[in-house]
Amino acid sequence: MTVATWARRHVLSTEDWSRDEIELVLENTSAMTEVLSRPVRRAPPLRGRTVVLFFAEASTRTRVSFELAAKALSADVVNISAAGSSVEKGETLLDTVRTLDALGGDVIVMRHSASGAPYFVAARTTAAVINAGDGWHAHPTQGLLDAYTLRAALGDLAGRRIVVVGDVLHSRVARSDIHTLVPLGASITLSGPPTLMPSAWRCGALPPGVTYEPDLDRALDGAAAVIALRLQRERAESGLLPSLREYARTWGLNEARVARMRPDAPVMHPGPMNEGIEIEASVAHGARSLIAAQVTNGVAVRMALLYLLAGHPS
Amino acid sequence: MSILLTADDVRRAITRIAHEIVERERDFSQLAIVGVRARGDMLATRLRDALRATCGREVPLGLLDITLYRDDLTRIGYSPTVHRTDIPFPVDDRVVILVDDVLFTGRTVRAAMDALLDYGRPRAIRLAVLVDRGHRELPIRADFVGKNIATALGDDVRVRLVESDGRDEVELAQKVPA
Image 1 (cartoon, rainbow over the protein chains, first blue to last red):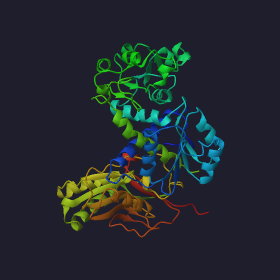
Image 2: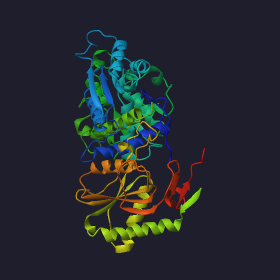
Image 3: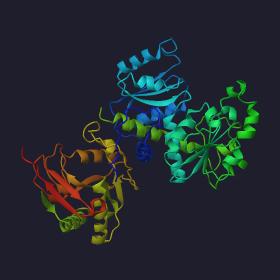
Image 4: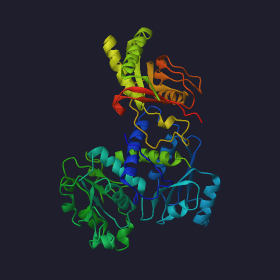
């Protein structure tokens, strides 16, 4: 039995994580899925702790997932959303942080449209901070839940090639998937329109373990899994795409494309989906789809992180 | 440093506990064994095997991880890894024999009972331990004891089992007088 250690106070990005840290979270996630399968879906470790959910950018599923996770560990949960709060009245992020700190939350879970905002908050609070998505930068809990879901379906990820298709340029999910799956031994093939790829990556200066193949059919040939990214409809209006219809034809997942992968290779999507654009309904709800499992596993991953942060001796 | 139980003593203790269980628990159909991770689950497995050898009955076995139920989360007991609990049977109306290696303050047993009760309502919970070393901080006692040992509070009782440590023995490491 390996003696695991955990020294992090915050979860801001998995970019600088060791493989051991990722493995510890995945192992604890497995124990948390067991808690969620019990008749009483609740364990007591965070009794008396307060988890503040500070979502300055719209989100339903991630916020609800964190709320269920915190409650399953018996924490108290406080919700602060940008709409209808002092943020809308012009309060600065610094003032919001001071207020959150004074309220005495033990963990702040935050989503913000500005990349790096959770780092700003982490440097100015006594609470532990979990990044629930910041701008285009990172969404570490999504990367971890995708890793857990893929492991559960495929076993060891060593040597497995996983396709990530879509708007990589604006996607914190794509970045966090890379930063979590590559250390576990997987390789990533990015696909999607060149206009929606970071320019350095499009020009061949890719991170280790990552390649770019604009032709989705070629990317999918023999792949172990595919993750489709959400396409924001405004990308077509801003001139990065000719039209949504053309995107769906060229980079949308349909039955014929999915069949190019290995037999039973799973299909994933971080949600919310634009069915008929980046993914056909028959694929999204088909036999290969792990999209429902992603949602379930998301709660368990967030429980694992809340336990590690709130349980850590301060 | 002294050896309290040899490999042979450990084997005999488990066999004796199995016989005591057979004597005291008449209704085997409702019996179940649940071991507390990490070494309690190994002892529970051996106890299950001993019961099979003693009376030919198969008693269901579960493994309990109590990390999420500890009362010292932010104190010395913080353990970052949470292992899976595996109780593959309904505990409702069963007589559950909880198995651990050492009974000391009673806090682990308290946590284990809380965890077990989240799975249902057993008819009764009994406690079997390899070693009872005294110094309880909670009103808890064992129903089946391999060996009672008088210890000083600062002593260290180390249980080694083949499955995790390569050999069976229980050792008492006495606190060095200041």
